Amino acid sequence: MKTHLLIRFLSVLPLAAASGCDSGALMEPDAAPTAQVSRATVGFIFDSTALATPPTGSIPTTLLPGSAFDAAVLQRSLVGTTEPFSQAEVPVGTRFDMESQTWKIERDPSEGQVLVLNKVGAGPETPQDPAVLQRNALARLHRWGIPTAELGAVRQVKSFTQSEENGVVEAPALHRHKTFVMRAINGIRVEGHRAVVSHGPDGSFQRALISWPALARSGHLLRTRLTTAQIEQRAREALAAEGETTGNVHLSWKYVPTQLSTGEWALTLQVAAVMPPVTGTTSTEEPRVIDVDVSAVP
Image (cartoon, rainbow, N blue to C red; front, side, top):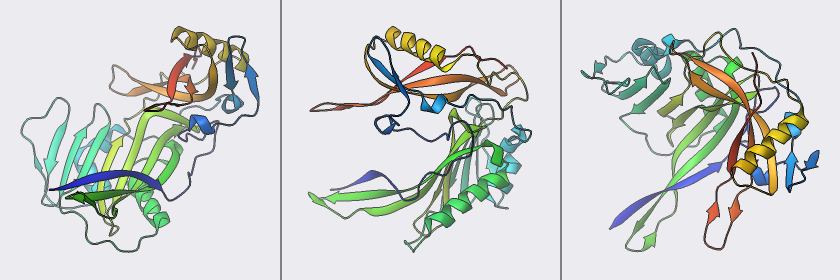
């Protein structure tokens, strides 16, 4: 019997990030900077380096429009095909499905989500330049309508599969080149919003999984009047409320999206208090993230 296992990603390019208060990069808590820390009386050690520059920017003038989720725009600009599509007769909730000879698209304009699948599949592996694949992925997202002002960290990785037959494990085989693009406003990461563009081993466009809903022009709470010391105190209280009493804590800005009655999404500034993972003899506990209210204002 032959089984297949998808292996975790191997990073092949460093992060590229937009400038601003926070790079938007995925922070590894145990690798967080140790400079400029303050010790709390209850045992927390705060790293507030990422809070050094408070958010001051406003919502960019150019944003991804809600019309980007229209069927014709997705076909023409994101997929880049002129093939005729057939629509599913009955939508699943707010999700609409459509297919052509080569492509399948699932779109949910309300949630700002899109899934694109190449039904043909990729060809044999050929030499690829990861930097070129990353540029191609970003160019595809730009054509679709994501402006530079909404781009945060970008990570280029490879994924592999590995087969096992009758107890014999085969060598890993390249499965996909993946470009992870995080959404950020003024350099601050928007929680939960990202695009993943996948190319096959032959460099062909194979898949896009996107969560990038249209932002409102108003209604955002992008700043705070609290000082770093006040935020640390709020973080201390939030951690204690969750049963934590001691440990290293990395603090960083983030925007949390909330859907408005108009269907658009507004952002609220918060601080993420991240504690490092805990590794035991039989298991590893993932990094714990506690949200800290900073009394955000427009």
